[in-house]
Length: 67
Image (cartoon, rainbow, N blue to C red; front, top):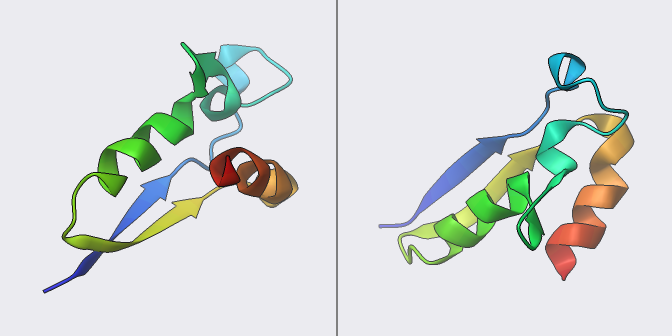
């Protein structure tokens, strides 16, 4: 049986006080949201990973996740 995972990275980061939402800030060598994607990619039961981000950041997500 396969399952999907949904990663919600749609916050604006207002309390973080940055122009870029915190899920797109680097933590080590990757943006924060990408660590979740990488973790779930290792679990073979997940056939689909869905990432929810603000509309304005969709292209940035595709660019970063595609690497």
